[in-house]
Length: 185
Image (cartoon, rainbow, N blue to C red; front, side):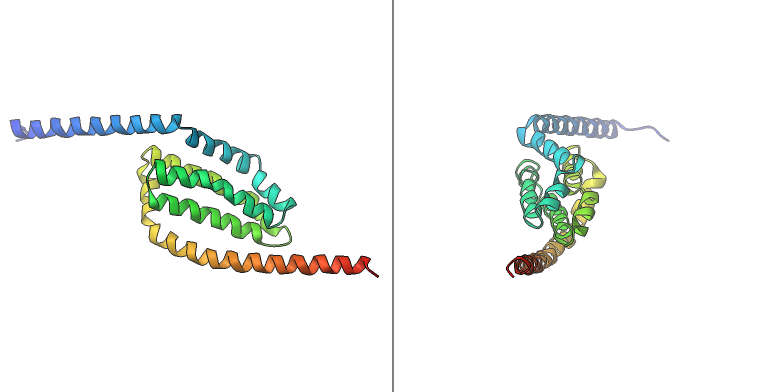
């Protein structure tokens, strides 16, 4: 008849208390993480690399080398994802986004650098980390649901990056030798 028994009311109160404790723990974890210097660093890297376009600019002026160097800037993201947030699927997602960025940047004749300007992998990684920190169920479900696919794609992109880097190096060597031959006669 819609009347709740004493035991049902007690269970509801316990569930409510448990949810309140979970929310408080989540807020405390978020506060600690947001005060963390590594977390602040990834926000700065995201801003410089994607908002100020340092990533594609370095790739443009230092073909291949710039893309590889800027990929090292993902290390703080990986550290936060793995050591602070403690999520392997999140770490894999950050690696995957970075590998896409690297593949795009290695596409020769500056086409890759133009595509790289629109990819914004640091912004994607930052969004995923913030989603985990803020307990965004959609982000967590998305990342966890794609973990196996992401791991497979990392392997595939590893092979693609190897061959693109090898091809880019060979093309660069050929062009360098060609330019030198123009002036040697």
